[in-house]
Length: 188
Image (cartoon, rainbow, N blue to C red):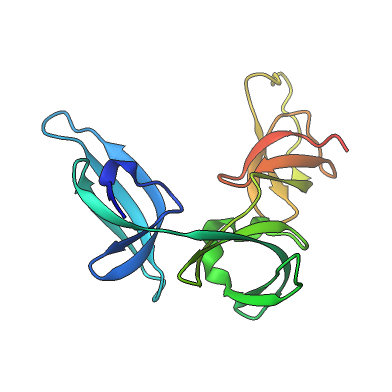
């Protein structure tokens, strides 16, 4: 299905130069002179290589239709993730590289959505947020106010995150998976 380049979004699968690519990031750039264009970072589904491509916003690209299926993450086996279909309990092996930068946020028994193009896995969508424990947090600096500044902390999955000064090591927080940012203190 043809679509205008300015409608490309992260997570979509497009065909370009005879190969299939999954879109990782996109940014519309409007220079001071001339027409706007879209800068797209994408990964080749077959080789895993990343590239950047630019299109004018009026150009068209071939978007591939994806089918979405829900799975439950079971465990990692070498370079593959083992996903279980929740109704039939069938297991499916998927390359771990498909997660990209979201890999640290994958948790046991997490419900995920697998994107497929003609039966081949092309992407995994994790929940929007996860609950993680803070294992290390810098002490509060005297005079620092809660509204104006955040301090660095390290999460149980190894990711560094900026948190409000009142958050201490050992607490559990809700983290946005998309960019690894603090959302709120976990109330559970």
